[in-house]
Length: 446
Image (cartoon, rainbow, N blue to C red; front, side, top):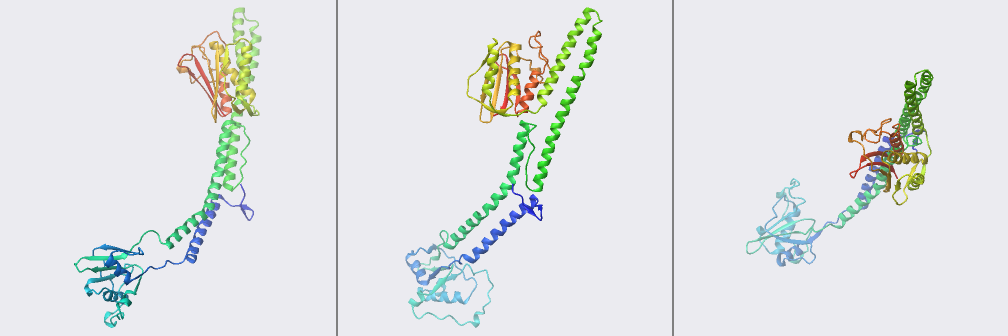
């Protein structure tokens, strides 16, 4: 994002928005001013008394500028010398009584206060002939009502149909003004949306990889402060996780010393007690070793790259099949994900190993969409009680109550699976299959 500075200091975002909006308003006002200066004033429509007479006699106007409607619509309105002069010419041209012709101008009548004293104004001069009377013009809108010999009143007015040319010019100019504003609106929207999009991508990347590179976003001071706050939050989260992992690793490591002392003291104990305690000590040592490995594998930063998940699954299943294990992989197309080879291979090994250990067989299925890859491992064992479904991913939880009690395990396999899935921006779930057995599902961003 290009930086905008004044006197060496960056302009805040709200000032940038204000300046863009101000420039937009100024541009529109300049265009409106040009509209007043460039677009000509509308031409007034000119009508002759002869055209009105023809409309009254024939009911049609060849030019289509007039319309005839029944009834009386004109009234005296405000008197002006113009009304008196044109009305007298109409009476002379129509050869009608004075009370049979009425004239008014909608743009004048009722809008102004009469300022003429009729007693001081001489009567209007009549045209020399009816032909001259028919040539008298009326500029603009008018309403003429005439009484026919049968006593019926008819009214002639201008026919307003569609837009006049000057109105079309105004509409086109307004459209041009809107087009002129579009670049300003586009620039403003882009400046506002771009940093938000970058933050959304950074948040998504943080969910997939907590140890991703810090956000590098430049721009106005508000954007820079938000980017720094985001990076500080990411650093605090990583430090929090690292501190907890370090604490667990330290506790597990320090437990080895008292266990070693306990083994030394058990050498002088009776055989029955010593053998039982030695088995417990070995179990505790195995748990400590597994805990240290779990902390080490889930806390270290690893490189990620695009890889074919199906090829990785084929390597795991082929190795197990070569050893005689009943494991199958459903065929399908390659599925590309971005991840760590070692971590994802351990994830697959844990899921398939659990199915083989507790159910004796494993069926692996890979599927994917444009945005997501799905790993499903199904077995045909006894399944898991519904109350333990949400606990199987807890560290050191063992579901031996529903499986073979003779099988071992520390209880960190599924915990490691979920940790790897979450670290890659996905998740892991288990459920009892409707046809029996357990179905473990892992979703990863494709």
